[in-house]
Image (cartoon, rainbow, N blue to C red; front, side):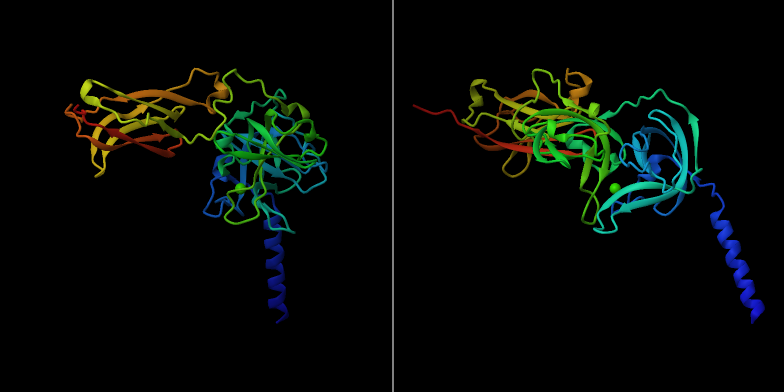
Length: 364
Ligand SMILES: [Ca+2]
């Protein structure tokens, strides 16, 4: 009996030693770690991984205890957490490799969170690959694209109008024409968000974090500026913002009066489509049959604006219908529907429809 117990103790000690030994960690990319499941959790949660990335936020900026920093690689970013007293001596722009366990951060008191992090295995489970120059260029993302799981952990830059202030902790910025908004959160407690007033259009760079209170975890995203210099009043082109109203990704504007095509009249169809999209526009009769295809999967191309603002703009187009079907025969008098379909570069399809009434030639 004694011998058996002793055997188990030796086995347990051996296992503990094996577990404590520096694990190699599966070599993956940050994007592999940020792949998520239906709950919004990393598909590698609980795994020990080794990833390479460039530092975007140094230890000490968001956590005075120097326990947290961010790295980024190939359009994906991640929080690195090290629960040790040793300082990880890295600076913005340094390329490093870290080995740790993929963990979903959740507050022990509220259960909220769901920011994916890599928890360093030991104080020494990181190494310098190449020292940087102290710079890291953030990715500009329109507010309507920013608050998404795939952006969590990235250093992003966006523009929005201040619409709410909960000082000193956070402010909210929004895009009046898309309805999108985001919380700008004071993760660095030295920042004063109160320098901006409601209605100010501001340009913010920060790391994307998540503090979501409800499963599945696809909400509660927050943009956390690192320093005072990450926030400024926006310098915008004269045509910005495009329109102070709600714009979906596809919008149609067609005159409402009765249109009489027998006299070579053409009804103008003005439309807005998301920048860099594919546009399809067709006229249907009330039985749902296609009468005329005006445009099929036509690429809207780039707007002429500077790269920084492109994501926030729509391409404006004008089309027209001469009242004829695909065989160029005059369509009978009656009601028709113009349908605009816009597929943006993320594959998101938006549809807008508007009626067109074709009249008859009136006799005297
Ligand atoms: Ca998340």
